[in-house]
Length: 253
Image (cartoon, rainbow, N blue to C red; front, side, top):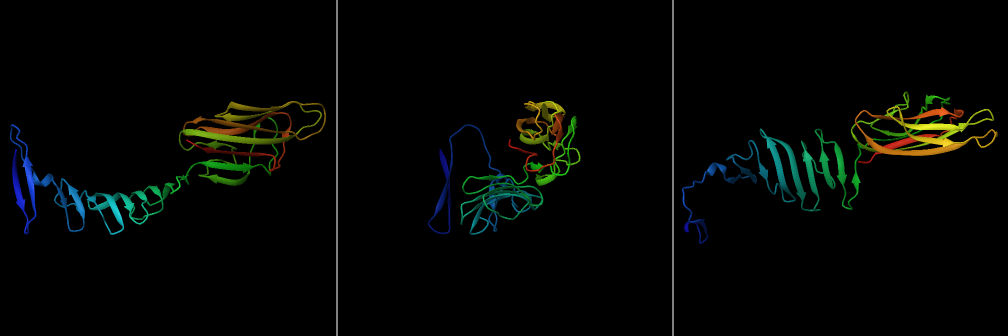
């Protein structure tokens, strides 16, 4: 082995040691890491602030990596010294709480707080009641009073929830109907793309005029643009009482 010693202006020095290997090698200084006066560390460039840069210790409170294209920041991974939080941002200079994924424009899509709780504010979900429309047999039940409809994927005009993206979804429904002595057993279906997924059923149980109530749930994989609705098959008209008739669901994976 042989070494080259680089001495400083004082007593300090660096030793550059070259292994005793056959062949000839060269060092291209343009491919070495370069740190400029602003703390930007460039790899493969002599001007780290111009095109692509690795920025370390941007300020006294934050350290991390910023990604740049043609001199503009397009992303960053930042560690905040004061809290220890890690931030992952795209096209954003702002800093928020917990672990944050952003899209263009800075809209928060997912956060994980210090307790490990995950928030996904854009996750599709809905819950509606039926308060204005009595549904007869052989028809889709139109749940018309909104509690929430995150993403507006449930339609009150069609009675359908349409999946915006593929994934696993969970749905639940509760139906109450007006049964008289002349009406038969009640059948009501949760349907996936118009096909029976779950059948909710209650038998006639005598000839009394009553208001039976039944519930059902369904969980399955849905492709994008698949839909779910609740279909009244037979057994009498669905009554418009929101406390007894409702439909909801959400994407969970």
